[in-house]
Length: 184
Image (cartoon, rainbow, N blue to C red; front, side, top):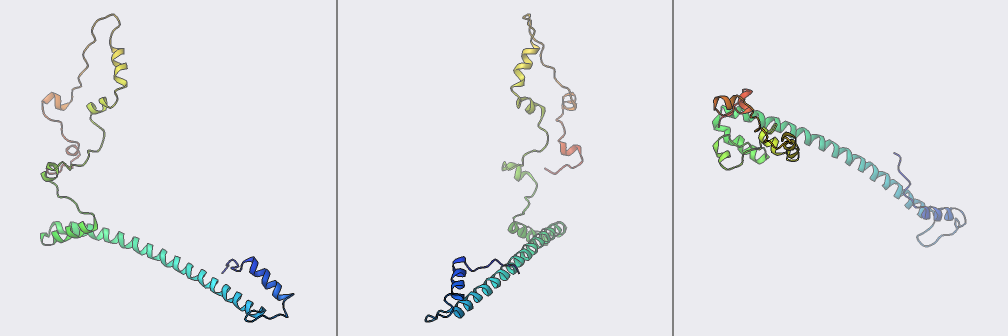
């Protein structure tokens, strides 16, 4: 394993001094052999720490992989349990309880959700009336261009006819057009 030398340059310079000019000198508890022994211990422990950190990182990566697998499997298991519980009312409440704990509870369809004002935002292209009001800067220029310059009044705007204006009925919801009608 390639580990950078943990011995600072100042300690290495002192070791060189004890290896040359001070090789014959011995102080109480400090001499060349004692210093070399401690330097060897520092290098050994540094290498052990590097190996332990590499093993720790590998263990953390394995843990992350296991947690991702567990999350995927439990999500799939909960989805299967919900489908199964549709035909088994005796366990439906338990499955929904687990789903609430997991934070994936589904609210039951029906008027209670709409009555509370907690309806989800409609998706898709906005209605034409909303789209026209969303572009107010374009309207004055269009009106000015439509108005004649000789003082005669402009013609009224053209009304688009569709299935709902011809028959007098409400236009069907987009979900009803593609066959995915939901109970109200």
